[in-house]
Structure formats: C-alpha cells, structure tokens
Image: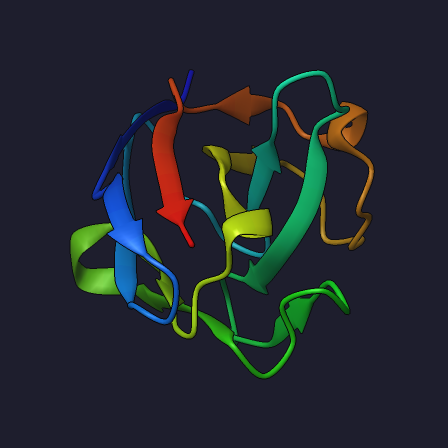
Length: 124
C-alpha cells in the first residue's frame, strides 16, 4: 500500500505562485510515475503533470506548460508542483497520484494511489 499526503493549497489572486507537496509512504517507487491531477466543479479529473521517479523526467499538460513545474525529492519521498502565474481557470482540487508502472499515461484511471486532494482557488 502507498499512502499519499498532500499539502499546500490555498486562496490566491491571479498571477500568484503556489507550491503543492505530496509526501508518500508505504513502499519504494522504482520506475513509477508520480502525477498531479486537478478537478474543477462539474468537470472530469484532468491530468496536469507527471514525473518519472527513477530519473526525474517530467511531462506536462499543454494548459500548464511553461507555468507549472513538477519536481521530486527522493530523500523525502516527496514530489512537488510549483505553480506560477496562476489563473482563475486553475481553480480546482488538486490531487497527487501514483502509477505503479513505467508507462506514462494521462488518464486518471491508470493511476493506482491517490492523495486526499487540496483546494486551490485563484481569484481574478
């Protein structure tokens, strides 16, 4: 089992920055994929970014490319989502997730473990 604990959500104004954290425990991660998703009210859960745990390769949705950055700290079993130049349309509950496979996919159903979610609200 993998337990994920997220932190870092908040209420901000457009243009601000925020960093989310996801701390994991329960097993070693090898070549897994660690991701961030978000879900706005009335919408499906949406892929945001992912990182390959073993080598740190990063991947982004087009909507956040150039504004968000995913990173990890292997020593702390933690990965992060640095969000810059936030927009009102970034408002959502953000979830971290783990895919126990080396194949990168962006479909939420392909991830095996999920955090509890943290609210990010961006006002205009």
